[in-house]
Amino acid sequence: MKNFDYLYNIVEPSFLKNLSIEDLYSLSENIREFLIHSLSSTGGHVSSNLGVIELTIALHYVFNMNEDKLIFDVGHQCYTHKILTGRAKFFKTLRKFNGLSGFPRKDESKYDIWETGHSSTSLSACLGMAVERDFRNGNENILTIIGDGALTGGMALEALNNIGYEQRKLIIILNDNQMSISKNICALRPKNDEKFLNIYDSSNQITNLKNINLYHYKITKNFFENLNIHYTGPIDGHNIKDLINNLNEIKQINRPCILHVITKKGKGLKIAENDNTGSWHGIGPFNTSTGLKIKNKKVNERAWGSVISETIERLAEKDKKIVCITPAMTKGSKLEFFKNKFPDRIFDVGIAEQHGATFSGALSLSNLKPIFFIYSTFLQRAYDQIIHDIARQNLNMVLAIDKCGFATGDGDTHHGIYDISFLRPIPNISIVMPKDQIEAQNLLYNSLYNYSDKGLIAFRYPRGYTELTHVKNFENIEFGTWSVEKEGTDLIILTFGTMLETAHEISEKLSYRNISVKIINARFIKPLDEKILHEVFKSNLPIITIEESCKIGGFGTSICEFAIKHKYKNDIEVFGIEDSFFHHGDTANLRKLSNLDCESIINKIQSLISIC
Ligand SMILES: Cc1ncc(C[n+]2csc(CCOP(=O)(O)OP(=O)(O)O)c2C)c(N)n1
Image (cartoon, rainbow, N blue to C red; front, side, top):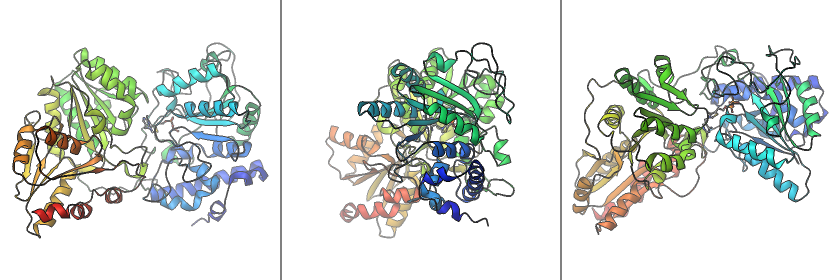
């Protein structure tokens, strides 16, 4: 195995200043080898990071990050920065519980000055820091790396507008690798031109890129210059010498600047370089010699996202009104097959959750059947659109909310634990979560056909894998109804989704202590099944609610509200995620940390159990 001691011994980035250009190139190769080796066992954001090694080295070479400030958009491409700032030795713990984060974290290093995970925030951050610097007459440089994907986000475009107006000195590195996770959907790159951002509007040509077959660009005033932002580029983002020269030049400019660099996502790992579907964007462990991914799921298991997308695909064969909308997550939401089958009925809107939501609402108003696929965490971006445009107008549509629950390796920027609390107060919205793949297929069918006059159906499902057997005939599930999973006489558990498994575990463990537990599948988180709920309370038994979701305003809270409203006095214990941010890690550890595992729940309900 290659010795990476050189990288392990880096303490901070100033050592770069003494290196020659050749040394910088060999450092970049060393880092590339290290990343491929290390990520092959931990997984991580492989292709984005392999693409910015030279760029990150050049930035740390030209600037002094002890004073200057470097911000990463999304933050998933910060691995070389972590290595250059003394964190190579922690890479074996990348994205693991108590290990190195895959994103910038202020509590990890003083060189991580802005935390991210969600896209398109960096330009606003950059401008805020520039204004503060100017207030105190400071002179540090403020820089950001933003990808061509992140540039499609509304926030980034809003910030560009403001940056052009404010005219503060700051540097934006536009990392154009022509990819978001999958191919980037961006009108700056015309549909028939899959090359680089076409941001010029008249003649002249440049040919300063040797290794890249660059389209001939027309230079006078371009998109950015029209916003009053100085533009330089495009340059080869793997040519360290060119990068250094250009960075030194724009460092002198006293107004907002953009340096447009062209990079290759996955550079140095052929299989990742050739990937244009996004398979190598964020992945688990892989084999360094074959480049193939090491799968740890069982043979007949499918991603939860596939259960949903394949059911939609099946229904869409018979129903031409079904259309799918995704904010740059075709790959993540398992919509590739749908895209191949119905290319005209899927809309990748770019990293634009707000627009995607309102656009879906308008499709529904126009009598189509839109399904807006979105991860729980990114739905946060579309809150006003859900209230103002969709719910208020009582539009009927399905929100397919993926990755509900802890986000494991991605951590607190990505946990899907707030959607219940923020959707629950809004009228004209129902929230459902199936317990298994069969119930998922039936509930989805019902959402599209039997509940199609019920406004917005927020259809939650978790990350991870499950079996998938296509149901022959879809079954009707009456709107707003729960089901009794198991009868019991001492204690009642109300829960839904994947936490039903934990409920069964608790029930089994308590059965050894002669405590009999009734389990109810509360698949409708809103509206509550009031008929069952009255029976539950009238039993006078103690009740516990369990949700892998934030406790404040969540499902358990709604049960307490019901009890107060109807003056029930049963003992109730609510299990959910406390009012705190939880880092990255595996589900088991994160659940334990938030008292959502079987043992912790049993320990915490000792007093309720002793009543039994
Ligand atoms: C608000 C938001 N929506 C979606 C995502 C999921 N996501 C992570 S990276 C990414 C693509 C980013 O593309 P780009 O900025 O070009 O960076 P690259 O990986 O190509 O370097 C997407 C869509 C996100 N992080 N944040």
